[in-house]
Amino acid sequence: MTSETIKSDRPLILVTNDDGLEAKGLRELIEVVRSFGRVVVVAPADAQSGMSHAITVKTPLRVKKMREETDMVFYKCNGTPVDCVKLAFHQLLERKPDLLVSGINHGSNSSTSVFYSGTLGATLEGCINEIPSIGFSLLSLDSDADFTAAKSIAGRIIKKVMENGLPRSVCLNVNIPKGTEEELKGIKICRQNRGSWREEFDKRVDPLGRHYFWLTGYYHNNEPEAGDTDEWALRHNFVSVVPLQTDLTAYTMMDEIRQWDL
Image (cartoon, rainbow, N blue to C red; front, top):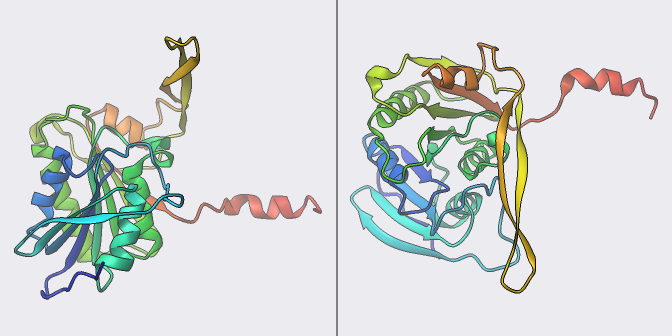
């Protein structure tokens, strides 16, 4: 497939998600970014939640142009969110985009959910490639959720990122409580909450007598009273903005491990 020819001097914005091309959150995010530049949408053909940074290596990837409008083109891909970003960078665009946005996800991606989220997987892939990247999530699993407040918040944050840029290897994880904008208490810059998902498996038996499992579970907050975390902010009806970095090195441990005389 040939790369998309860029005919406009307007900023080029890549949009993707993990809920699929037909998700309402994606449509709402596209509406927000259209005023900022030329938009290329590359999204999974179907829902890819929980795919994290997965890439497709055992089956062929296919991309189909769905439609084209003034300053906007839509593609769907049979792969993961990260596949979508990689294909955009290497096949569909003739230059790197000026901004990558992912979402608006249906459901929270706070705390350690960043390690499982396809929304944030795509965001981090943009960050690895030194593109200013933002992942947006709304704390509602309703497929027809009201995104009015989320769109307003997304527009404000996108404007500031395009004005100020982001440091190399840093992206933003934005989570927005559901409700009206008037009900939101503001935007809080946070750190990632320390917690974990406690998995539970519902064991069942199929008609042939074979066991199968459904993954269930709950989130356990290790620091529920810490007022500087994303979980605290969201619980108190603030929008949480967490800067994420792709360098996972625990620098504070390096000197200690050197003393182990490995």
